[in-house]
Amino acid sequence: MAEGAARAAAGDQPLAYLRGQMVPAADCKLPIYDLGIVIGAAVTDFLRTFGGEPYRLEDHAKRLYRSCRYARIEPPISLEQTMEVSRELIAHNRELSPGSELGLVYYMTAGENPIYAGAAGVAAERTPTYVQHTFPIPFHLWRSLFTEGARCLTPSVRHWPPQSLSSAIKHRNRLHMWIGDQETRDADPQAIAIYLDQNGYISETGGSNFVIYRDGQVVSPRGGNILWGVSLTALTEILAELDIPFVEADIHPYDVVNADEVWLPTTPYCLAPVVRFNGVDIGDGRPGPMWRSVIDHWSGIVGSDIYAEVADAQDP
Image (cartoon, rainbow, N blue to C red; front, side, top):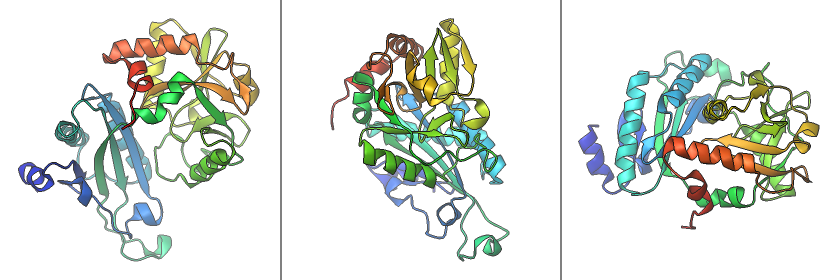
């Protein structure tokens, strides 16, 4: 479908990219026998805009393609074409939500397989299913994270070990995190699950990295045990500009409750403060001054007041 025809079909509705075509977002659907649904054979990524421009587009697109290579899913278009599609979607869909910032999701599966027989019944020749779609970022959902701070709990579910599936791939096999998130919300509906690894060390949440600030330096779990986020990379660059050391180490829950501050680096809101961990206050139980210094510095880089964007967000 040509771009002009897609726009006409969508009318005043957002577009999505599906199997090489721009289609109305409402028509962006996968069959029930797609391997991304049947066996979870799917990789993903996610970026956001600042001022309507995609933030660190190349970093996210390259990570998607690295994930595809590891998963043996051959992208049907080039990296450069992927980024061009992203720019087209953002440009069109932002016209329908003026003033909004958009999130853009990449989703690529191993393709369609009309029979269900596990590994024994997968067709040799398949075309990967490639989707891109956007949505206005609902900053109001995270307002309390900035004004009051986040609460984190460690569920009984452990993080998927890298010995089974590399932590470097961003994938959709998240059932363990779904279960852990529900367990956490049963205990505290507002809490965020932070997963321990098989050795009892901190790994990550279902949607963010997790770092602690103590003794003048920021400590992250070791890279081999987490999905290294693009926002975590951005944070390391900011810390270097602020002359704050950044190190990787095993982090025990003991280290978290004794930290000066704890932060969640993530794409939608960049960096949130954690003020309570497993029922114990972090510091004085309020968002810390170093977090605010970092988020303000980040704002200067992207040309947008990230704190106000979230803390002052209005309910729809």
